[in-house]
Image (tube, rainbow, N blue to C red; front, side):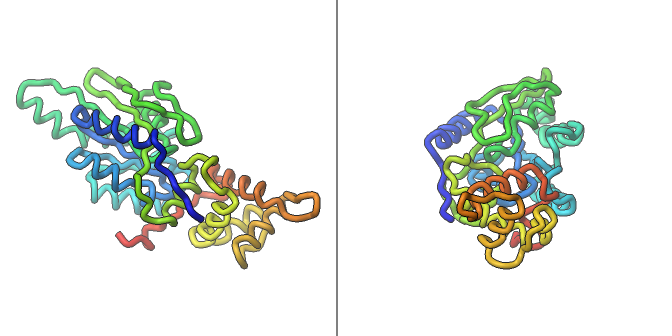
Length: 282
């Protein structure tokens, strides 16, 4: 399948973030724990070069626990600070401590000059990574608009946590050049791209192959359908098991694709990480 992105509003978002960088001391980068490599943008890391970073593997409740720990440990060593997080339920203490650790050198530098520094933290990441939910968890209140689909945050929003800590929410950002259609498919499968620009049936077929590799047996356990054979045969079997049939008795593949994508994204197939740490060529 061929996935394309980077509409005009995304280029605008990148410019807006770039304009605010001189105010930013720390960057919290939200990645999706189900695809922790593909959702960490090299373009964003280049944009934030020189800033202290905290990598947040968000939506950890939907990902394989062991894989999340491996990726969190790896990013912690690489960037200095990384935490796994479920912005809907986890206490904010571990994440807030990571932000404070990342900000400590900045605070100390200003303290030596006799200045009490207000630390400004950019929260950034791909669309639908849960940036606004992270901010709301840290703030302990609904300060940033959030939703379960990409494109909810339209502009930059400042949220004050305390007298010396402010967060900047930002729109989801994808990089302009697609290096890998495999990575693009993972980003699409977890829900970081708008449905309107996708061929959902083709995406569901790609997801079937990813699931058979990432968690063998998950499709059979959920749908009672054999996983062997071509992806379209598996999707057809899922449709027949669920009764998704057209008038002529043919499998309604479009409906089956939508259900498969929705149930994967909602965690109904289990806790699944599409990118195994052991398989990655870091």
